[in-house]
Length: 170
Image (tube, rainbow, N blue to C red):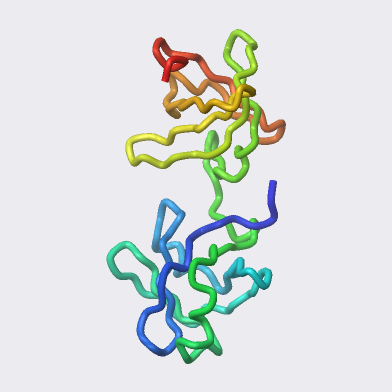
């Protein structure tokens, strides 16, 4: 489990005074108002910024950093992931987990067959979908629904699934 969680991506500037538009990777976009600082994961490494203000527009967070008053001071980091320390994360309910904690998890069927590992998680709106990379190199799509995903163990990075009819052929 990493020390940082991605909560958004810096997608563009907003105005000329250094504000940035952040596409949220969180269930609640307003959670940016609760943060005092974030980090940008840039090609130069992690850079920590204190948040001066946050406003919202069209499901995006518009963030103003302390000490950044010019578009030229921040524009070069466009495309960077916006990270927080794990200690700043919202508390999870039982059965919930952060996506980053299951990337790389081994996937087994309820009969004990190893399918592969979770390469990526697609967020479709209706339900998430695990992209499982098989040993053969092929990918398998597993819908994250109770009848299919039976157990997620983030500590041992192991997921148990029930293969519904038709899934293996996808």
